[in-house]
Length: 344
Length: 291
Image (cartoon, chains in turn purple, orange):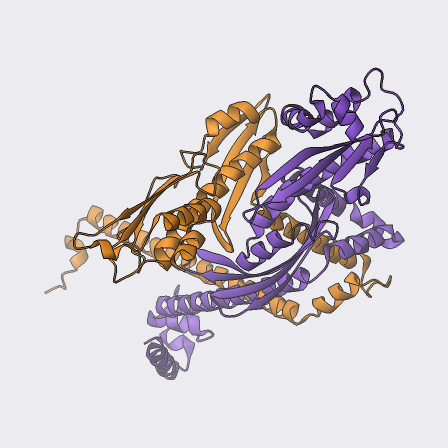
């Protein structure tokens, strides 16, 4: 419609130009402003068509604005996707080294101040998250694979540690757009690598969480396990350092049992077994038990059945005071009077 | 006869009014024209700006940022050939994005904490059932002299008041972990019921009934289509943090037209069913029973 009215307009302009008086003085009256065909707008004004022409121009501009805004939205989405893809592939740890390198250079060190403030705030936020969750995430990378406009697949790798036990997760997330505002995310593959010190203990649990792609179950269970593991390790280290000649820990510091005996009663040994069970659903249960060994002679002397009752009493003390205090109390009690030097 | 001029018969005041309205009309038309003209000019400028923005975006897409970033990520000490300001901007922005990715990754743990305002902490608990991410729950906590819960979206049956009185101002980490435990257990129980209904709809009789907190579940199964025998199970989860039931009651019901010879479930089977429900999640337990 606009097209046909434009044709009419230009036809009429031509006609008007042809009808314009050859000499301007012919029709001029005093006081009347000079009329000349110098612009289409003026001509259209003469014909009463100017408002229509301006309205059409306005519509054309509006249409252009609309089209450009749509194209820009598509380009911005593509650019954001590309940047996300590029940044996602990078290693966080390696890039931090790069930032430190840039800060040290003469020509760039002055420019880093403002950015360093922002990075410091982000590091603090990460530190807070680590202390609240018990999980310290150290590195993450992601490869984006857009399958369609409604489905996006991401391959993630996350590295971290819980109470000193490291882990690595390699998994795929598929995100599907359900509606304009709603989307669903499903983890479709999961590979877990736990710290080599505990990998064999956690093998059945890890196998189960990998089958079910249950990352939250893994992390919840691993945090609980790592917490008890670090408590056990701390207790064994403390006691072995305090009594280096009398305390033996099995299999180094990743041990599950601690043995001690009295120098004046070599026939009796006490072994504290501390295992940490983790169920398929991630429930962590520490089990601290005492096993006593005594010579026949010693047992004959034990008319009150102390040795027989010790494991149960020890278990009660663990429940009320914790494993460390229960073990230390046992060590003190087993030395009779003062706590003298205990030798193996 | 003289030509009678119309003007002689028009009241001068009326004439003045006509003139005034004509002037007003012309002024209005001029004002409209001016507005239209300004609007067109504005649109023209907007089109120019949008074209420039589009050109810039197209140029950005063509740039080989990926190679530069990969070079920066490498182990060697060389830096790309670019101005110091550009280099600092690129590296700093990329580092920030990586940190933000790490912060986002904390959602995998099920717990994220942000500070939208200086004295407000927002905790978000993301829930999941195996590989499927479910709904998040939120809480806003104000911290002035003590911590105070401002608002939250937790289900009503989570014992928030009891737990917060004990832990909120004494051990915030434990408080957050405790809420996470309640929510994770609830979502797990609920989703197991949903999965049971979806996977075993052919052997379920009627709907699976459950409480809002999914801490009581009751359903009936027909283990064999040709048999009239129905197994009714009632599972109770005593603690809201339990994922496995603490009480399991199994009843075998015979249909109206059933005979004694239709009995396929014996005491030994019932014992086995109970063990399955006690030791496995709901859907897995039913799968084990029908195998």
